[in-house]
Image (cartoon, rainbow, N blue to C red; front, side, top):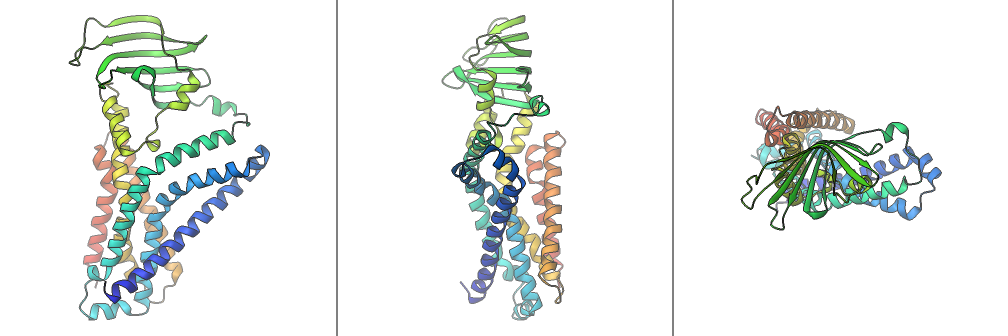
Length: 366
């Protein structure tokens, strides 16, 4: 590695880790003080509180790492620019890409590391965090507004290799609407499909209304005539509380689990749910590379900062650019889940636009 590359890398790495530590500390401190009254009222055990915030660390890291990369890039190159070091580098025949090569490689390595953390640790950490939070709130009475809140797009795996998809689920009244149940054999081939308009848990049993049952042969074709019941008691052992404990959430699943889940759900006819899950799946691939893309954005902005600009200028630019980037990403994800954009395009649109914009700015730098 060249001396110049080591010089640039040292500055970027030191600022990056400093930002990560500051963000982690601030997040935890702010969250503790925001919930201090509740923590004291519930008399939360210190070991439980420690485990709660330790489970938060992987989630915080993957969220703040892109901003830390942006701050590190802006600080490093704006400092070089103020000290006329960029002019010296350009005078020696180096292009902008040659100067930024080390930072770009660093961003790629950070993105790969985030991809690994996001797939291997974040789902487990999210699940553990939710369990600890539920345990901490176990002694607190829920407000009526919270009890009446419906869960939309509810999904879970049940006994007898069943896959449940429910459009709306009201835990307070033990009521489900828009129910689809898929039963699979050991080879994961569908054997039965149950569709019902409504289901109510009453006296220890699920009663389905306007239910249709389809049976399938080994080739996946409908066998016999569908059976219709205006009202039917279903042999489903899971209670509403067990549904809540076992429900599937994309942020609790790895890429392999989510991909397999989408494949199983593909025969349910739940088009909206499948589309939303595909957006979540593709986002698991594209989101980790936010750090790399945001470094490309930071390079031209840092070189456009005037000599007299202080570190506050870098911070202000990073906030504006980061905010615009995340707003664009949120809009594209929303358009994808609304069916306006294809799932893959929705997950990658912000990356494509911002990378194109940053390359254009770099190309037009003097």
